[in-house]
Length: 360
Ligand SMILES: Cc1cc2nc3c(=O)[nH]c(=O)nc-3n(C[C@H](O)[C@H](O)[C@H](O)COP(=O)(O)OP(=O)(O)OC[C@H]3O[C@@H](n4cnc5c(N)ncnc54)[C@H](O)[C@@H]3O)c2cc1C
Image (cartoon, rainbow, N blue to C red; front, top):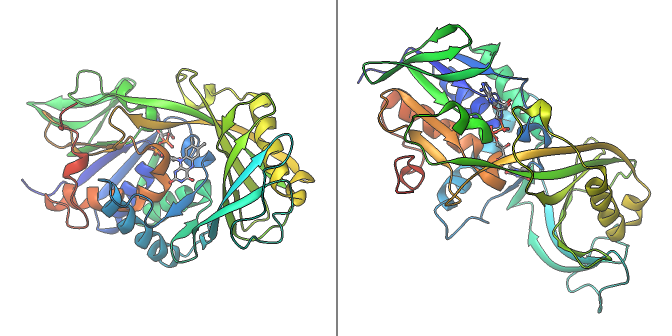
């Protein structure tokens, strides 16, 4: 099979942006079609936390390690400041009311001066890092367009096919012609994949807030938290280099709306997250909520992403279902898929665990 000359990538979240960048870097003509806006969904509202070895011992281990290394390379290569930096990472136990018994179990940073107890060091600047997700995704799209890719706003309805092969995508009454198509529409991927033999992709909703006014060090926190009414939550707290602190958590079974514009924010859930942050640090307790957000991570039934050829349609590919680790795994997914599309095989990592044709 000859290498495709024109590829349409559907979705400008971090996955579509990464695939587009690595294809454009090797000279393939790429059109990205995005419904709403670059990084308008989870890729603009997620934590952006990266871990080298937290997926070790699972099928994701090699992908995560390759991607962690690629993040460091991209931070140099893209020549854009999108908040990439290494971090130390801690586990903290805290309660909305009262204190956790005993003192810190490991040496605790001074700014963790609230009612929480630091129970473990989870990572160091060798093994954990962060990006600012919206800026990272935008930087990838910017670098792809610098290398000739184009971005179009439009709603992809389906893959246009001829004789069992993808020949582009249908956007309204128009067909955007291409030799290969990549579906990377996050939790919405299944909606444009009707009739294709793909495992289902769902959306799992979560909330986040950003806090301003607490200029705290580069320490990521994973919190074991109990609310006053007894709920067990696991908020994650990521100070960012721009001075804001991001806090996320609070899974919600609410159904996926038609598009990112229809995602509703529950203020009460956001308040719980801000209060949790305030319990571990007096600086965070004094900080103001700047943004209240919600988004849906794309999840599959077996917990593994879909990366590879869509069975039954030559020239059709998919990259989605990365769950809680899409920011981490986007670079290796994009590079490996670009190799599969252009060379016929991925050399960066073995994509077989993520084969969309796997048993469901
Ligand atoms: C609260 C939260 C915190 C997270 N924290 C982290 C973290 O710290 N580290 C980490 O690695 N990961 C994290 N994640 C996971 C990560 O954010 C996601 O896995 C990742 O953003 C998914 O990217 P995506 O490109 O697949 O999907 P999305 O970001 O959802 O992008 C899909 C895009 O497709 C577009 N689209 C949809 N339908 C169509 C259509 N018909 N036509 C054209 N375009 C369409 C959408 O508008 C959207 O822009 C977090 C997720 C959540 C929810």
